[in-house]
Image (tube, rainbow, N blue to C red; front, side, top):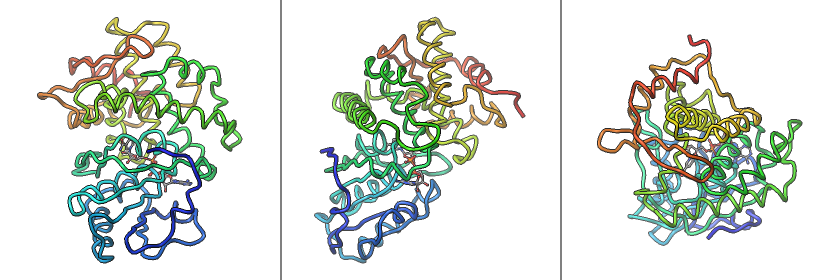
Length: 337
Ligand SMILES: NC(=O)c1ccc[n+]([C@@H]2O[C@H](COP(=O)([O-])OP(=O)(O)OC[C@H]3O[C@@H](n4cnc5c(N)ncnc54)[C@H](O)[C@@H]3O)[C@@H](O)[C@H]2O)c1
């Protein structure tokens, strides 16, 4: 169940409930429920040690299978807490309070849990949907603009994949979606966009909960994007910036193969650039990106499948020749080192 509402009442202390925050999300509350786990922010916490910290706290509290884990944070806290909840006594109760735009539209919804492993993002994980997700745009007021744009990249992706009207509405709003001077802009529009985005994701997830078929389309831009994130140590680009770059790579690949319509490829690329996402990045080697893409967990029988589009909401997956992929990656680099 996804609901919109005040988050604070959920933060009551209870021995049967374990709250998990990172330092930034814990700072959003005047006080925390007793025994809460507070992790260091960032991907470095999303590993076995982070999961162990949560599991140990649950064990020390004497929690049981019907006990409740509550994640209060961005995608990192949500993914990690959900992973820990999914393996605690083979599955405890789980609620998510996503506090970033990315976590609201993407990470919290759809049941994927994960930790990073062996230098690869989300390599170890489970499918474990939360029993409830509470969205509150109030959380977004403290989020830096760069993190808001990170979530916006995923919103644009969902619109491109599954809602042509939303895609047009976003394009009309253009770079003014989040005002450059800061703030959330038109909050009523933002809330409407959140629901419409979740509706698109819900459709894909309902149709294919374990990603055996069309849910794989939701990886548009992610194979290229994960390659860029991994090659730059998961710190230089936000997930959204990397995915936006990846979507522009996918549009370029589709265009070169005669699959993607020229007008759509140009228009979608121009829109992503207008939002501030770079089409070309510098200071990273194509070879490093390609090596990282090789490790991609979405490989099928040794081949990486790429999500391409003929046009808005007209999606397909295709394996691509490695030399062609290398050309497409090179084309997304500027004055390389
Ligand atoms: N499970 C899925 O389907 C799925 C989908 C997409 C992404 N993800 C995962 O989500 C993660 C990225 O999510 P993210 O971008 O939310 O990262 P994040 O959780 O690291 O949050 C980004 C930063 O914002 C801070 N923050 C969070 N909420 C805040 C608030 N309200 N105000 C101020 N600062 C706040 C965090 O402390 C952190 O520093 C990655 O680990 C990615 O793999 C998972």
